[in-house]
Image (cartoon, rainbow, N blue to C red; front, side, top):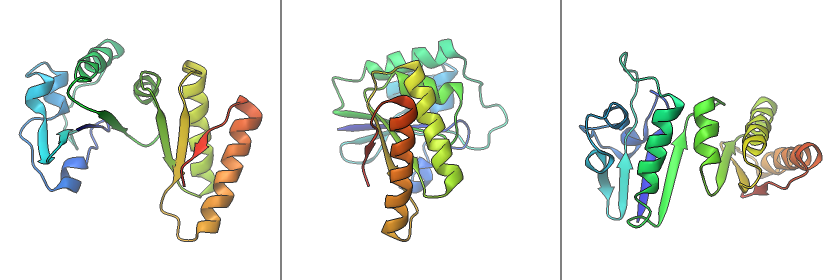
Length: 172
């Protein structure tokens, strides 16, 4: 059983990818309009989704206190779910780092473009600096030639090893 949370701040799209149009979303939970359990939808058996919001003018800004309350609510679902996945936005913000440092594992998705590889390194560095105990993994996305992915992954691993003195697991 999997719980998937679309935590992309106001640019969520997992509902679209699943072909669903939920009535309740992360915004409603953040504004305490209803509880987490009431906002979950199930597009497939054994999968629950907390849909994010996209392009809403009145989307609530999430402060650290409210985000931590959300994380506590999500932690409270551990008995019901085998896995909790939090899909965050691209980029690097305080919110994203906070989600990451409260996780058991972090998976950074990047591509072979040099700027994306540097962004992935920066994300790993910020997460590691905030909680050096979290295992870091990464994968290359949107790569047409496997050799491109391997070359970029090697460069990213070298930077992580050299500057952070840790190993980030390359998942392919």
